Image (cartoon, rainbow, N blue to C red; front, side, top):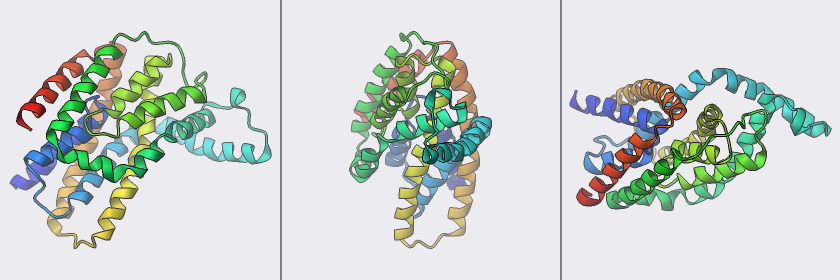
Length: 276
């Protein structure tokens, strides 16, 4: 029972920190370094937690994702026919193109995934990155938001936000914090900065999940009943925690109040440096 409670706790931490600007990878790595996972299927468990968080994005932004799904096929058809014009494209097609451009910088991150993952084993290093994340969030509140949205954003804006996302591949740097800040620096309005950040998480999480599943498959594990129960509990708690985090971050960004997370990351970074 105690281990299942721990799995629920991991799920809550993953769901909240995936979208709150405090770095889910950093928090999960610190928890693993301190408590560990008591079963052999830690890779599968981590994968399921991320998918639970991703499911929350699909629920909250279902309308936008549906438009993007149909927009993708419409976009491909226009491209092959040579009739695609970005300026007159519907929002679904524009979001697809913006998302594709924003995802390009993740390619080198995927190539270096194994090397970056090694950093997760060093709590003090994570502490340093949490301090850096604190500085990013501190300056984020000082940025004056513009009026750019999905109807006016350009591919170069998406590329810049994608580069900000690349920085967040290291544990301790928040993906949502860096991408929202990148959007604000590109004069995105606050609502679109949050929406685009969360939609960008779809290929980021799915891509990472593919690599994690490949690692899991290579190990040829025997999935136990305990592992199944742990993954189910982790998924459910990560899902609901992520839903709460998405609602909360939308409120917080509108009120320009990242300072509380900046202070939290600074404190967490110091503690990791001292006790890591």
